[in-house]
Amino acid sequence: MRRRAWWLLGLLACMSLSPAQDASTIYRCTDASGEVTIQNGTPCPAGSRQEIRRVEALPTRPAPPPAPLVVAEEPAWTPPPLSDFQQVAGPADESIDAPPRPDLPRAARIAEDARLPPPPIYQCETWDNDSYVSEDPSPGPRCVRLDTGGTGQACENKYDTCARIGQRAECEGWKRRQREIESSWRHARGADRPALQEEFARVTRILTDSTCALPP
Image (cartoon, rainbow, N blue to C red):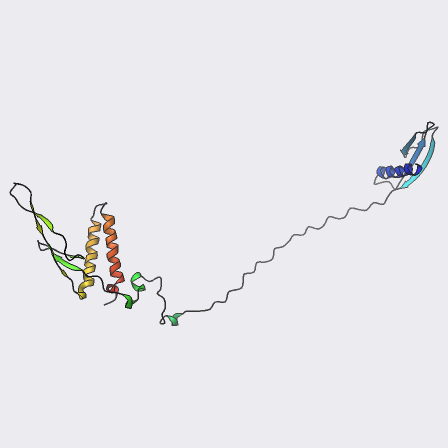
């Protein structure tokens, strides 16, 4: 029991020490009734049995300095090494089955030996001595109004006569067909324009994809 009391005495002494003290005196006081009190730095009252214990202060260590702030530096960017390129075609290879250049017009991208002559085209004469070109060798009749002297309305069917244009003049015939469709398209009403525009584009493709696009 005595050892336990002195152990508590030492613990209280350590807790009560201030940073400026090097040692502390602990008083163990026992009064007449046998009650024990522990006093730090204060002697026991008169009439009490007093035991003194001097406790040395533990040396204190200074706080460690703060760790230096280390800023991680990102490594400098290094461009990736250049790839090894191998030339597979050049100016000298253009004569050996070189693919067509994509920036050339449609007519130039088609090989000359793959072009075909344009389809047949016909020049037609009307009953009133007008002419036009057509892809149809037998166009339908025209109902020409007749003069009935005011007794009613009547018309007579008139047929156009058409003949195929020769091969040497076929391209010129198709170009004329293109111009006629373009003229009709530009003077057509709004509802008729889309169909004429599609027909104009179709005839234009025939000219650009056939032998008509080759130089004379």
